[in-house]
Image 1 (spheres, one colour):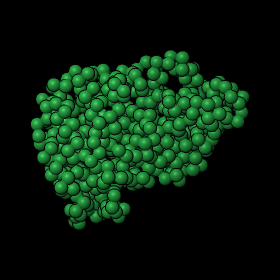
Image 2 (image 1 turned 90 degrees about the vertical axis):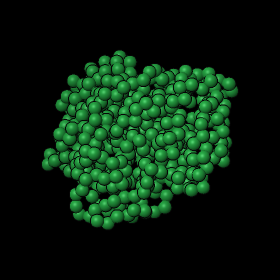
Image 3 (image 1 turned 45 degrees about the horizontal axis):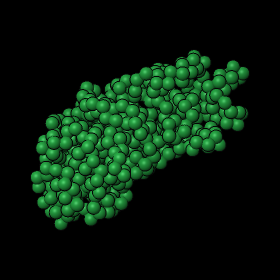
Image 4 (image 1 turned 180 degrees about the vertical axis):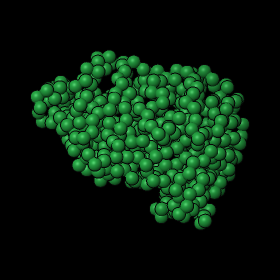
Length: 485
């Protein structure tokens, strides 16, 4: 067995081995789209890209994966997260500052600015802790000391290990345990991870969030809501840091592996359960839950990529959306765990195209190329993960809703049909939420019977002809086309 201790990875050639801390594993992707698009399809589409799996967490209940050597690209500079203890002089300063007793916001500000060249503006945090947050005293007495301890434990948790950056155009994932994640987030809170050494990553420090809490003496309620959720996470971790792992996957599928949407005439739509009441996170239990992500999540993703988080634990209830977002209460996740000690929950992040509010821009979304882009994006996200936490013998439903239809000005009817086609191409049923819009839910429910025997290819051709054939209601147009063809 050949080892690269410098990078903290361990590999075996041409053999199977159990997951061990510091392993990089490569498994054959076992996902096939729409029952593999077998002989009845004009084009056979098999998504068989290999998955590169970095395992930095020790696991007691391991699964077997075929393994292979680390690709050369991961030995190039800048392919790993630079952790603060790797800069000895800086880490010495951080250790000295973080080891001190921190009892007030003023103490916290002094610690932050002792090792950060760019000073953190604490006006907002002062407002937050003194005017808004109801558990300030408990935070400084019981929670912050455990965050400090976890932060300083970073060199132990990542001894001889490097955190790989999940690269563009590489189907890859990384598994970390909850203790490692808590330590990393504590470091981000204290702004110890230098952006200068991680220029290939977006800013993940809490500095921007802290400085957004207050503007001109007025608290930003949305940011306060986010801060409340973060504080609840820290409190929960300080109370009980239980065992568990989380897998982060950056999935990329080559263009040649994507469906030819106009030629899927042998495949029909799956089932859909449309609901106007409820939410994805509350009522999508046991489903892969779709997040309507900003394109910059994780530093920007390509049109052939998505992010999947497997085994995430939910900590908070909330109310509101966008500017009205607020923390509501603590939430105890009862999803259960899989053999790898991950919560049985999956979170799929896909970014929709952004259209401005003009009529011309809104009509652009019906152009064929843009519809294909959205179909591909949804399809990549909706395929079963190769490292799913759910039962391998079945495909769980997808819980989704009005993807890209808020600030991004997407057409609800078009986005529903796009997601319905993409989910069906992955042989998965939809659990679709309209977030209180009973009128739209009823329109979907009334449309479904007319789509019963319609192929994916035919529906694709209908919606891509809508832009050139006229304006108006897309669902009515689909009904008209089905009746007159």
